[in-house]
Image (cartoon, rainbow, N blue to C red):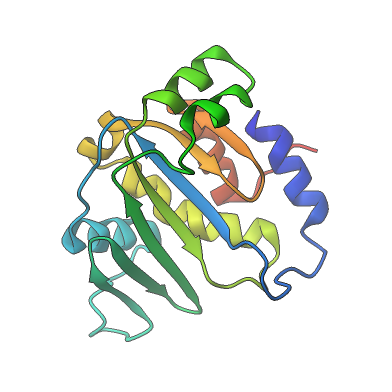
Length: 183
């Protein structure tokens, strides 16, 4: 499933993105229950993703700021806002679940009770680079045991794609990270 959407991303990456008012590039982790993400865990995930310190002291362009509920990761030229919620993402869970391809996806969507959205503020980036940047943070976040255990799937709102956390989500994020897209 992710390979199909990633193929579309690759074909569209040459187009200029970022028209005013356009939906940001986003990766949303959906959880069975709300998962609290302290800044220390977010900083550690960013450090794993970029393989450098994110304390803002070594380099002010690499830092984590904010507090749980509204956090920011500054990664060089990129800014990622992290928003979280303790209810279903997009509200009408049953209606959204009806639009999904498989019963497993629909069940996971109906079951989630918390979410964490990673929104990239750099709208001008080509899609492949934007999703690669988001995957650099999403993969280490999913490696945190409390997040991995509670995560039911990963959703790309801009693309309308949902992948279960049964290996497909990590595989898709890994492809996004490496910008290896099947056409």
